Length: 416
Image (cartoon, rainbow, N blue to C red; front, side, top):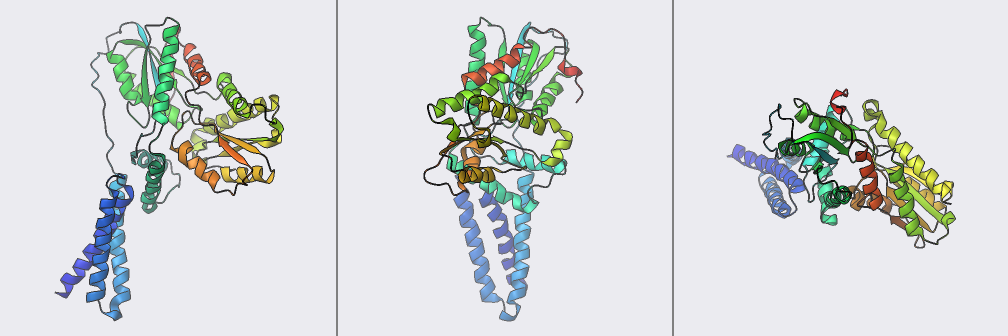
């Protein structure tokens, strides 16, 4: 009988740990259900522990139950990390001998982000960081990190990222239609949402595309831009059709001009010498710089060029700064503190590397700034990602235009 009591208490501790993780990571609509289960299990464990355990063995019992709790916690964490990803790949019906119908397909690729909370994106990110040997979040702490992501979605309501890219995509297609191009077909795709670049490529092939232009709507050449190219290349590996890669945008003078245009529109007739500007880069782990050195180099080059443009417009160079959102220094908080110490009236910040507003810009970046004690007479104003700005759409079109008249094959001969 004594062993049965101990087993019951241990089982309660194990399942309390298991369902606690479920509470941390499940959809907000059902999280309270798992919270109630966790509380009931924990309460039952405490009740039976105090009722059946001897006072002399209480300390040992608590340690033992903590171990069982962690076992349940660890099991649920492992299940989270092995969560299957939804697949929606269409059937490729075109034969490799089919030369197509003669038109061009533009595969528009962006990062993507789930509209509502879905932990799979960060689970995949954890796996990628592990594979490259980058220390980030310890295994057992990852559910807490995912819980923070869920909390951000609960505050934001939903991510605007994919919806904004959808509008940018429509305006890109519209620009070609207005020029009289009725033949080119356009396909929207995301790395972390549907359709993926692979799915978009299959659709383009099934609809008879004879040439493909990959439009990488990323700032830099990095693991993200290469991931989209790899997906497209894998589908096209046996097809003898020309493929080109347009983008990234770190060297786009048109895109750089958007930052000046947007800032000037907000500043208006205000004194530019009393304006601070912070260009925030995304950042990647130092370990990734060895494999993708262009990410950091291009992100820095892009922002330095924009600062030079701001100086030419009359803004004071000493009031223009760079910061990183993740992985690298200087951090956003430190730079905002510098602006506070300078007693500037207004500080504008751009998430310069982010093509469309997302949880990073809607929640994470404002939270980083909110950690600084901002004087009541000082304004900190976010000007958003690139977004559906006519200048941004023009910059994308300029990149695609380069390859619209090309005939020879290029991308498939690239070394990966």
